[in-house]
Length: 186
Length: 186
Ligand SMILES: Cc1cn([C@H]2C[C@H](O)[C@@H](COP(=O)(O)OP(=O)(O)O[C@H]3OC[C@@H](O)[C@H](O)[C@H]3O)O2)c(=O)[nH]c1=O
Ligand SMILES: Cc1cn([C@H]2C[C@H](O)[C@@H](COP(=O)(O)OP(=O)(O)O[C@H]3OC[C@@H](O)[C@H](O)[C@H]3O)O2)c(=O)[nH]c1=O
Image 1 (cartoon, chains in turn red, orange):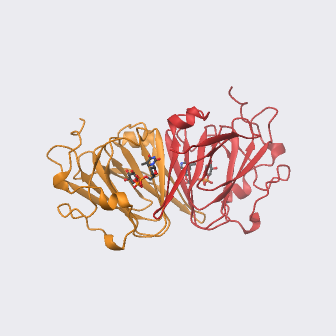
Image 2 (cartoon, rainbow over the protein chains, first blue to last red):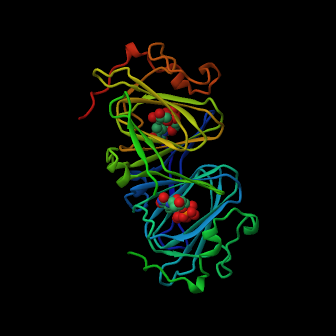
């Protein structure tokens, strides 16, 4: 195996994982998550129990910003997305933002309490993630408006031209109204 | 949640899982693997440690037939594939075949020792799977030629028009030459 590498970011505990993607005439192959190698590189041994996939038909589809009370390991299986994360945990880093393009070569470990969102940059983008708690329809957690003016995420495609769910368009508060999630576990 | 359902097949331990896919104007969302619900429906609590993704550029890309010594949970994150499995474990069911179309609604649990393969039915098909052992480049396991005349898998696209790796084209024996994998664990 060639190598993977892991980088820290301005959001404590949020890690960018550079994957080893093998290309050939068929397409490409990657170990998207590999417990042993990733733990050796500093990714938490987070114990996933669920794998979710969202398929997004058109470029410009935007989902978020959701800070569920479980950790996530996110990446793409086809297409590309602009990923954006906002720290919604109580503490000094509340409101810190990080963005990176999710190509097949890039995965992100998102600690619980950090708001997760993405906008697809190509049609037919498949977004896949592992989580370490089972989803509960009644789970309560912080969310943030995609167009919050304080964090001002530089969405590549204007939100007005974007496909967004009714919930994400109307129900999520601005940063000042967010009830912070519990502080970072150390 | 609406329901999932799980079906047995002629290959002992090989299970078809019908997933609950939620469609909306953005595309679709699925719990591709959900430990608790799936175990309640009879899927083994197999303990994945690795998630692999292969992206396949063109319809007709064919990969297999590989019977690695670990269990797999396979599905698609975009596109569609024709999936084919051949039992390569020592015992009465050696040579038994099962095929099903892998749409976003269908996942398959493949027990170790069962040969796994697929042919993509659309361009840009992302094939994703979870396994419960870390891959080792030197792992030894049974493989079977894609064009084996005994099992005679009815590939929708002729193999001659298909993108296949050099290894899968030349290195895999016919059924009569396969050294069987260990029998099914009970
Ligand atoms: C997250 C989740 C959702 N669902 C259902 C509820 C809806 O019927 C459907 C889609 O749910 P949404 O809340 O609209 O999900 P989405 O807006 O896509 O957000 C999800 O993907 C982006 C992620 O940032 C976010 O954490 C996650 O909640 O799937 C499940 O059945 N299980 C789940 O785990
Ligand atoms: C399976 C695997 C492969 N690799 C590397 C080896 C090659 O450089 C590259 C592609 O490997 P191939 O052996 O060509 O994989 P492929 O033909 O796609 O077969 C895989 O996908 C289809 C599955 O049926 C099969 O089990 C699995 O081996 O990835 C890894 O680094 N890790 C892995 O887990």
